[in-house]
Image (tube, rainbow, N blue to C red):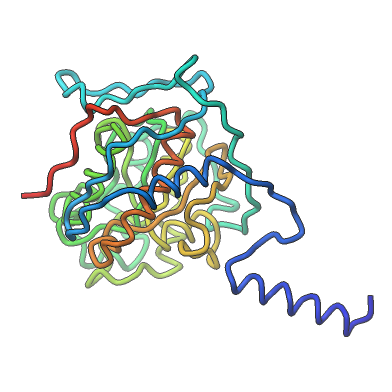
Length: 309
């Protein structure tokens, strides 16, 4: 191939990349699971009021799960929010999600800690002053939920409400995330929720790359302790922290990535949905793929998420 021909091929590849196509040299085949989830989303009726998450009462198609930890709701929890694990004849076999090549993340080269635990991670963080974010923070927002969860949600960083309470996703976006989790048949106690950075950026600005790199070492350790089956990255910052700086949610959402022994799904941040309610159907399609991978299905009797007070 001459240099001129090579330049023309590279130009075409860049053109297809700009259109949202990637890995054009591989035949990835047809994934009926992705098609079914999008079909359900397209045919669904949504309440698009900004603060409400009301997915349709439809059954998600699921693949038979491999033996794994079961989700268990807290004692006394409503059975309507308890997940149903698909098994035997109730499951429809579907091909496993295909792995996708990924670029280097901020975690490359991070040191692993033997016999690590959440207590050790929190002790290491201490009263952190490693980056400039500590200067105006109120509280370090470490993370919350089941430390043996199969599913982890990762956001960008704490906002004003989180900085005050010391818990991730407790403001308007947090209430919407809670409704999303409940729509999956789970509760916040069944999953783990955290952020890339653990201190609030001033005026809720996007964290700087050096801030993300310093703080994300603790996120990596948290994921190493939890060892989740699935990770949902909420928004560009979380996706870029784990998959690389050129990763954008608009191009990667709805696709599975391999990350440190887990499967990772990027999707839009709840704060984005507050500004763009019509995108809820897109996120719901992504969450149904996560449910299918984990072997979860919606109960027809499941209660719909209620709008926040």
